[in-house]
Image 1: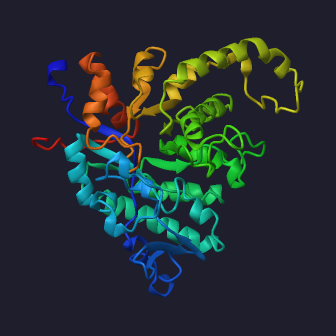
Image 2 (image 1 turned 45 degrees about the vertical axis):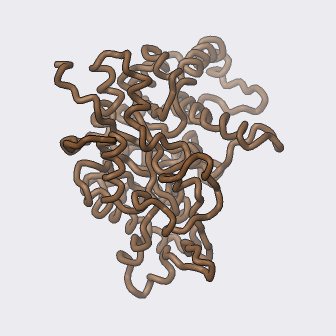
Image 3 (image 1 turned 90 degrees about the vertical axis):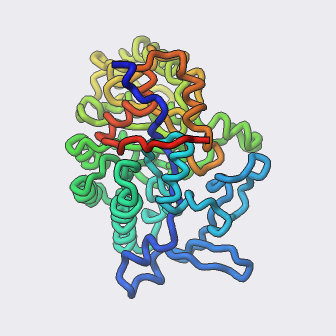
Length: 402
């Protein structure tokens, strides 16, 4: 019954963890601690991650919690100046309670959003050791610190799809139901999802069989959006979130959903208000252009359609069955419910990044969806995430939020 639905809590499917300094040094052999990602400080007191000859600071925009918008800065920030919730799982739960967040899925930081750090490593064998250490830490320590409050997100070795499937299986046995993937692997120097040799087929087949969600964060292609060579940064940043639409369209026309009927993808930090337009446009293109494309004709050197059956492609059905969008604060997405199925929309808070709604997260969402039925509100707040990630959250804590 709707009167029994608790609408005071949400699940965020896109937050971030700034890895604590012990992640790798506690988990790799003692002889390897100096070459695993570890933290060092310079004479000024600024600390850096050091790995594979790289010195990696933490951006201030990745740890804004506790600061006003006027204080935001991309300048490096030491851990001593971060809110503990950035890197400490127990402190994070306290912040989640304050913001009305019942559970959280966290993307990594120093490894970048889909583990590019280890893909780029000079020693990939040791990189894989470090990647597994991260996954074990994420499942056992971060998520284990507060059972039912965190959804584990793992990394895969992008450079070896067969090895990736084994790691997916290993982590699935430990309770993981999602892995991080790139919105566009091509800029990383990897094959696209349309690769004629099926480079990613083992990964997608494993995701299908294990029912592991393919989670893709905007920016996981290690590229910055650029309208033109000298467009203002704020114009690029505004426009760049909608590149998530490119990932959606790429998957819709890939044939992957036909070959892997249980494959599901989640697109993070791209909002969703653009979805109705791109779905409509995709249907127009399919209707008017598919006939010459099917004949194998080429226009302006663009690739063809591969093996996909264009005559029986159901774009909206595939969207409904396979694609999940995530919103921080998107009035247009809520206004478009119906065209965007209410079962396909989830919430995020982007804690502790500069787009975060913390500490007002639950109220921001409720301000957008409060006019909807309690059943629909519940789906968007948490029900869809629980179903997609096969996640059973802890009982909401009893507390009074300020």
